[in-house]
Length: 331
Image 1 (tube, rainbow, N blue to C red):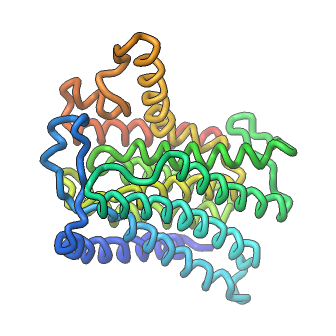
Image 2: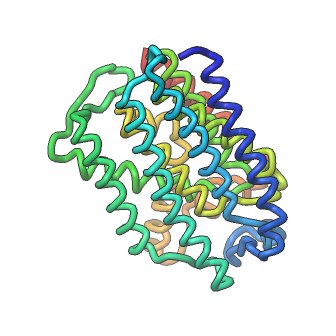
């Protein structure tokens, strides 16, 4: 695979996602597919009421198209790096993304139909996430690739019978953590684009084709979406997008054995999820007191006086630094 190949897998999903997003904005306006803002959220966000949501449709179409181009090209027997298992891995990643994206789509559609900021119940989401996660775990076990790479130690470990629940945890935790991160204009898309770039760079260094391509495709699609999702956002990705991104990131990590690399480069997701857990636990233990000004974590900084876009810049900068650390952890 050459650098020109990588550029193709970046530019194509970027263009497709950007064009799709451009077309979806007026369509969703006409259909009144707008975001409903929680009353208990930051008051500054109330002005975003009615902003088109479900833009994640454009994201996973862009990613699917990019991966489809890769699958067609990698099936060419004249390619020196062609391999049937690369096609199967790409299919597994795309199906995982679409499955989790479908959960988000159903959730978003229910919210829009009912005209309230509620969708699927937590139990319904968890059951569907568990089923899809088990499917990916069985695929990896069937191909005999259950070893997990440990950054810095540079060793592989096997979880044996615990592999299936481990994959379930990775998939479910990541999809929900990315979902929680999607609370400011451009935040989830920006952070995840940087994670994708990190995956691509590490994959290029290691000669890992599927990690390089999938990371590049994800980054390209998200930068295409960011053209319209940066502050002030013209469209939101919704649960359709955030759940799909959680699914595709964890899918890439599982397929490439980089599960332990994900919480390092994606530490922002972890901190966002932990802030919610801490907030709820502290609230219950103290009888109504709050540990953070508001959770998830990005709202804590926002209510502390930081501009929304500055919080996004800070989180993206932290992710970029973590990406560099993760890179050196694989050398």
